[in-house]
Image (cartoon, rainbow, N blue to C red; front, side, top):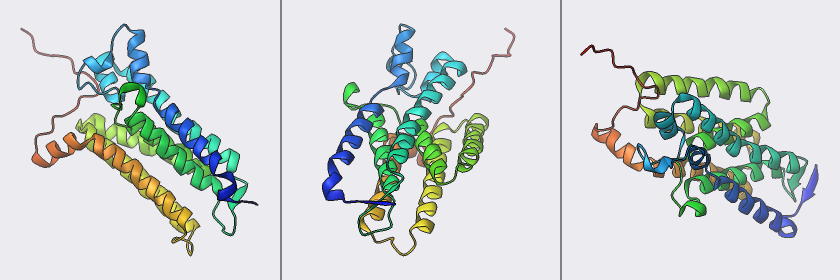
Length: 241
């Protein structure tokens, strides 16, 4: 492992943060809906995200949007990890790639949720967050990716069956966050008070706060018992006259 001094390389982290934020600002829901001569922000909940795209344009379009958001959250994370995986911060055993992937994930989700290109009103960040965790955990062990895929299908199944979209989304994000946090705790046992490690945990917390803040109305309605069910697949009306 090659040592890297933060003081001498800080600008690389700044560049990574800015580029990641701008990538996050790319809203595929708006792009895809514009190709259909529509604006997803004028339909349904008005949220430019996968769930609203599914309800408005159908499951096929929703899946396409979900895929692009997954890649948006995950691919930059993987690239950052590949670039810095052979470096540790000077005087520590902290792998620079671990710090960088958390930084990139945080900034991509920030860009998705608060995009400057959409006057800081973007999507709720669920798909991009899950993409981040899928690729981030795969950096620890490649087969973690397979487990994440199974976990994502379980979350989608829960949403499809119960029609509790917001609840399923928040459970999914929280579960993956806990998993990633446990991996870091085991990896850096004995160095948990290191500033870089603390920063990594803070970014994971921040990613959760982004999604919870964007779901604040849903959370309030859930607690008040007023949350409406979200039908992912439109049901056919079986009544006859």
